[in-house]
Image (cartoon, rainbow, N blue to C red; front, side):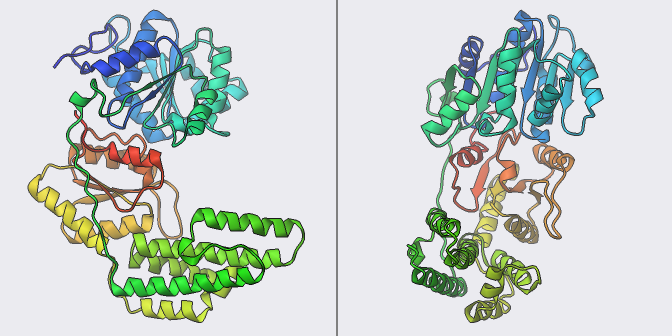
Length: 475
């Protein structure tokens, strides 16, 4: 194996990859967006560009990432591989990390002494607006997960502020996918003042040597009779609501075409009525709210299972029984069809959806054949994550739940410290299976993952790329 040779990079530490070197050379010429599938070393490119800029330009590097775990991950990576002053070991003060937990006065003091700052964007935006320090001597701004640079996200402000105040600005933006359409990509590029885009895909000649063969398997799953009957009840409820809306002269979608898009179009009609002070608009808005709740229940039944549906309808019933519950919830939860479904569900004693057992079997088979495997299971909903953790644990699979920070009802989220600790244990092999919501998609630092299971189809192109990038990579 050949290694990168650079005065500011630890000897024999970073594998020399042709595509990374080519991207680095381009990124040193102009503000560049680097689009690399997850797992192909975007952070290594950032390290190479940072080392080159620090050697040729006196100043600082500022690296931004959207979450504290990602910021800490980048800090660890740079500390591991970067040297200063022609090969000398860096001082502790050379590297700093700013998050919302860092007091402002400490940030000002640390900024003056540092060579590289790793931070969440909102902190930097707040400090710039408050005039706590200047970005004038920042010779490189690195923006990770740059597809977020839209609307009012802090990346947009910081990029504009940096490019107009720095003495010698250079911006490196990184993402696995900038977005699903050209307009979105152009928006991100404009917001970050990007002049060049460097893209690689797994089939490119200079990338192929670092990609392991990846097998993609689609598994068809069929619903049992109980869930099919539940779907029938939910669709009957939808049909009756759409029929009431049709009687109010609204153009309604067909019950079997009840998509978010069709419901949004329906809502646009309703809002027009409300704005024109037509009293039918408010009745329609309540019926529309019922349709939204029913569509979600149908989606849970089809993609998640009986336990997820029961939990959702339990919450819905509690809302309907509450004095503060909406008219939509009260009307829906008192409908005889709804009440009949709830009564039928009370007889369900276990998870009915076959996906839970199938996922368990897939993981067991992988671990039986390859005991050292690392496996990630992605699920959209926390309820499903917990269902899978319980099911896998019963099967003797060592697994951990990985979700976001927000707590809901009786369910506690994970603190960023807990998230980092879980990922560290996963990397070290303490357990073999991580069951994650979308919080695990961005920047999850796992050296090699042998299997990724999508518990349901992924609607977002960016999320799909991030999930797939967790497996099949080299190193």
